[in-house]
Image 1 (spheres, protein in one colour):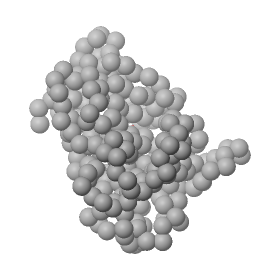
Image 2 (cartoon, helix red, strand yellow; image 1 turned 90 degrees about the vertical axis):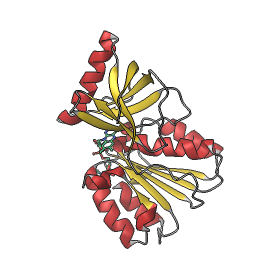
Image 3 (tube, rainbow, N blue to C red; image 1 turned 180 degrees about the horizontal axis):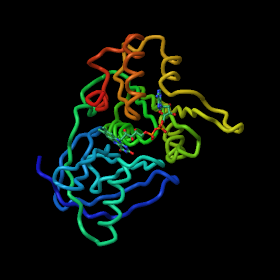
Image 4 (cartoon, helix red, strand yellow; image 1 turned 180 degrees about the vertical axis):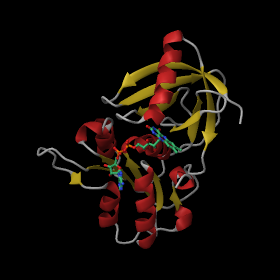
Length: 235
Ligand SMILES: Cc1cc2nc3c(=O)[nH]c(=O)nc-3n(C[C@H](O)[C@H](O)[C@H](O)COP(=O)(O)OP(=O)(O)OC[C@H]3O[C@@H](n4cnc5c(N)ncnc54)[C@H](O)[C@@H]3O)c2cc1C
């Protein structure tokens, strides 16, 4: 795949460890909601990040988490910051992955994110909304602590405005003031649906989460060909 030069338009902190990065491609790019891109640090060192924006938007939006000890994402983030400071472009490969949104499906949708896996499900949720598809969408977002829910207000507003859209944040280690769902995010999905057979299910997050969710969801009726995650290619 050919890389395309992108200017780093902005880097903004969403939380102490997650940054929103906006990239302006030097030429139009093609991708489907739910696909990812690779930041080419060198011609051989490439790091994948889900595209949070949708194909009709001119800028590519990324959500990059750099928790302490995570050298893998931090190297990509340092490269982006360095190029931004120099006003120099980064090389990016766009339109990768097989877990993209199936626009033609009539089935209701479960979107499940762990942490920054949110980027992936956000793009798909926006694409469904833009297509004005009148079907139930359940977006589960699992985080370790409430302060990681960086788009919570927007999603709650979305759920208020669209009766078919349901937003379920799930906090693993809640503060005493948290009144919402708690525990692991895939367990919240399992407890809400007796059978997952009727749903298209898209998920992204830590590989360990993707692994346990795949096993548990298949056992609860999910259809293998309706279960999508690019993490499956890595585990
Ligand atoms: C194709 C691809 C795209 C990627 N895109 C991005 C991206 O856009 N941004 C980015 O920062 N990284 C990306 N990565 C890297 C990787 O997926 C992330 O580092 C990872 O999702 C980060 O999760 P987190 O630390 O935010 O989640 P955490 O804070 O570790 O976990 C969030 C929640 O996930 C669940 N969970 C976590 N661990 C487990 C477990 N062992 N069992 C069950 N549930 C668990 C829990 O509900 C937990 O609260 C990508 C990787 C690939 C291969």
